Length: 179
Image (tube, rainbow, N blue to C red; front, side):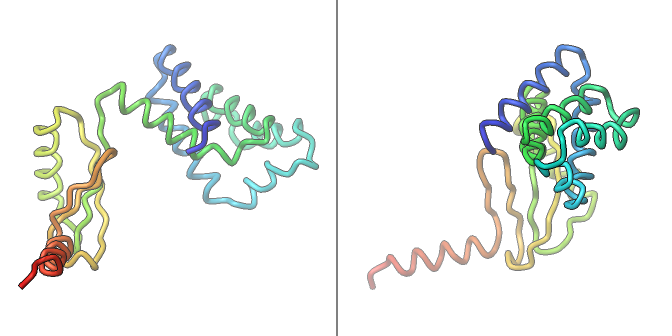
């Protein structure tokens, strides 16, 4: 993440939190980020320096006025004015990071070889919450290469209990053992 994204995303979070709008803005920021990421041509159009800034901002107005909070719209227009609209995903990540830190929320991704059953996901989420004392947003991803077990990807570390990891550890130990 760039320093620009950290600064702008953090500033938007400070404003939204002060106004009690942090949850709403988080959802809307995620939505517009996903929308713009899904339409590379529109994002490119909004970033063309030869199109006057007023016209680019008018396009944002036309597309988003009444659809998102004025703070989100003005934030996108500010980024557009500064030629940094491509920083929006980084700004959204910083906003989310600050929001989650303030609200005791931790994002965790469980990586498994096969899809996890919902009951198992719920048990895992509850267990992580009891160990950390935080609210856990658990997502899952399938990677067949891990063979079995689970790897937990936390914001600051990775806990690897996969078969592939343990096999690699055994190989490492065997390579370093002198017979």
